[in-house]
Length: 227
Image 1 (cartoon, rainbow, N blue to C red):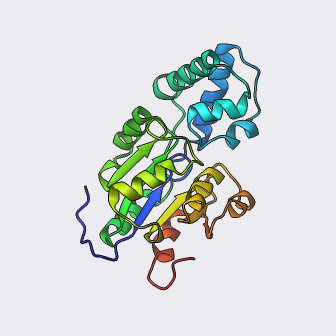
Image 2: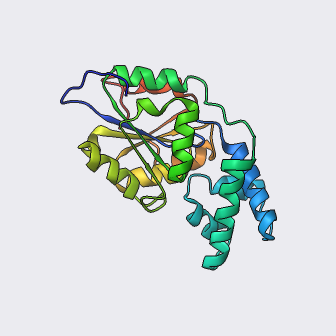
C-alpha cells in the first residue's frame, strides 16, 4: 500500500483495468478468436469482439451468442481463460504514465480502486505482474458482482471504502464503465485509447474525455473537476 495523507475531503478514483490501465485489447480479441475456434462456434469479427470488452465473460458470451445454453457458456469461458491466462503470449504493457498517474493520485490522498470485468484470478495475476497492486485500496471483479453496466461493482466499492457517490470518479475506456457510473450518478470519465470510440463514450455519459492517463491528475485538481 502506498503511504498517503488522508482527509475528510478524500475522494475515490475507481479504474477499469483492461483498455484503461493496461493495453490488453489485442490479447483479449486474439484469445476470444482462439477460444471460439477451439469449441467450434460460429466466428465473430474483431469489431464484435472489441465491442464486448469490459463485460464479464458470461455476459460477453450472452451478447455474442444470444440464446446460448449453459454448456456453451461454460465451454467458451473455459477456453477463453485457458488461452488468456495460460497459453497466449501477446504482450499486455501498461499504458504510458499508468504507474506515475497512480502514484500522483495516491500522494494527493485519493483512495484508488479497480472495478473490472476480469475474473479474480485474472486480476490478481495482472496486479502482481504489473506491480500496481500496492496502489489500490480495494478491487472488485465480475466473479464477485454482476457484470457491468450493472452498478453492483461500483456500489460495492463505495460502500466498502465509505465514500459518497458525489466524491467518486470512475475512469474507463468502455461504454459499460460509464453506464455503470451513470446508474449511480457517479462522475464518469472516458479514456479514448481502449475499446470504445469517443462518440460512444460521450453518448454513454462521460462528463469528460481524456486521451492519456497523465491527464487525470490535472483534471481532478480543485476547481477543475468536471461535473
